[in-house]
Amino acid sequence: MQTQEMAETEKKCDNPKITEAQNLTTTGANLSKRGKYSEAYGYFDKARSLYEQEGDKANAAIQLRYMGFLKDTLGNSHNAIELYKESKRLFEETGDSKEACESAYRLAASLYRENRIDESLEEYKYAAKDEEQSSNVFNNLGFLLIQKGELKEAEKNFLKAQEIYKETEENLGLIKNNLGIINYLEGNLEKAESIFREAVECKTSKSDRTIQYILLANGEQDQNERFFRCDDVMTKAGICLNAAAVKAALKKYEEACDLAGEALKLEEGMPYLTLPAAWIYLAAGNKTKAVALFKAALEYAKDKEKISKIILDINPYAFKKIDRNETCPCGSGKKFKKCHGK
Image 1 (cartoon, rainbow, N blue to C red):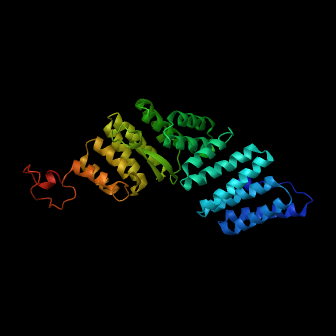
Image 2: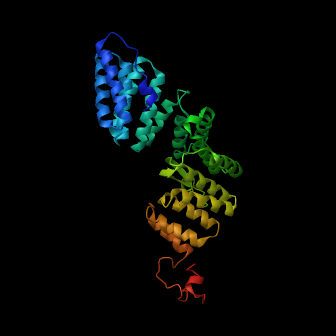
Image 3: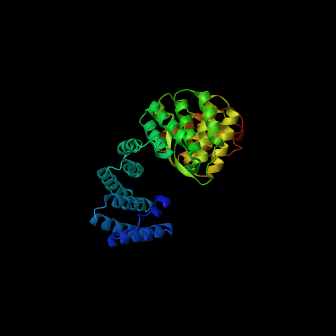
């Protein structure tokens, strides 16, 4: 919910119910700013009821959108979805396509949170009919199109997002990150490298966390095995790691490891990036670091058996307790710490 939007109440009129509804909206907005979301919801709901009684569908639809936002904020996307749907329907009935697209945008985000991907995709497409939408709409639409394997359509939307981007949105780095992913997946490595260089340099909030696709330097040909979706990653860290994957593909291993190290440092021990970082270090030949990161990835990896096999392929003794000064069981004659225990 945009604070500016909430502050823009209707012109005063002689209808006491409309005046009361306006006052209820103002109170709800103030409560929301103070974090009193449940109380704010009640005021918006009362305002909605008054507007509906007076046949003012447009303002009733705005209240429903406010209410949807509050439900999302409280972690109740399921209820938010129904509120956004009703808001969109009312705007459609009034012929206000711009506001209907705005409600569709909010609806799409809630549907995504409920993992209703196909429905979310359709609502983002609906929202994108308003070409004056924020760059987030086109960026998010492109993001879902990647998931569907529609890379060309995804790229069109990312380019649109980049074209209409405004500095106040502070998401240019994420847009460029997504454009870099497209070029990487299509094999345009030099162009991807250049785009990621720009993405890394973009202004990004230190605390900003987002949903990103993270590239894997695993050499897989199957597109679905070349990246994974991370639902809670620091934006800057994700961009750095994606830039590292491209560097690794170009065999610029020192630069790749530097960027991977920066990404891991930014995440400050969070587990999200250990798996893709492990592939970076393995590509660079740093098996010790790779094994340590693959082991860390076991905590959250969906396919633990696959990750365990990768670790054992690198070091068959990785899970065995062997004293570092014992002779390595591989038969080399070296101490374990000088051989597979490195």
